[in-house]
Length: 190
Image 1 (spheres, rainbow, N blue to C red):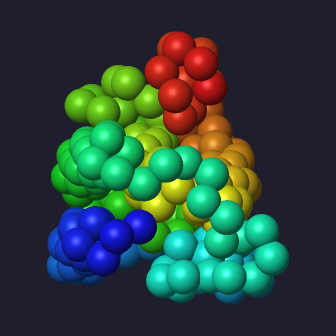
Image 2: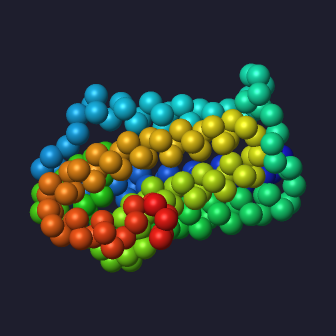
Image 3: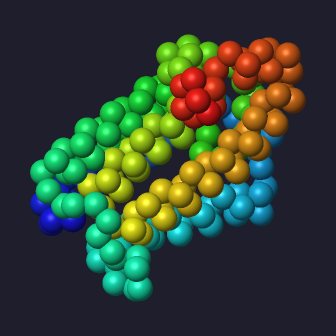
């Protein structure tokens, strides 16, 4: 990806992560939280995926192969998907409020949120981040990006399944009804 392109993507991601860190303050106390070893099952995949994306030019075997053409079209489409995806994730984070956590957690006084983006998908933060990653990968156009995106999907799937079990235990029939009404990550599909 051309330097000015990669700079634009880096700025958007840095703004997103800066907001994310600021917004993580003031969340409710945890009533139940997963263990460190439990987090490792998906965290390792996230770190590996981020490393694949974060290395400017990876020339190890086929990882650096350009599989999509570079240019203004892929840059524009990628940037639009990045901004839309991260905006969707931020909207979901705002809706969760003090019940948000970066790990699988049940908060004290936890409520089942079904408004805003939670009417569209059950895990809109993951959906938004994955859409943003898809945009980044399309603009990058290298094989390593598609591998990284696959690693992120696998990591979120592991984490999502754990969250689904915990939320079903916490909210019972109400969460099961929500699962029947709203797809997990992609509206009407998945």
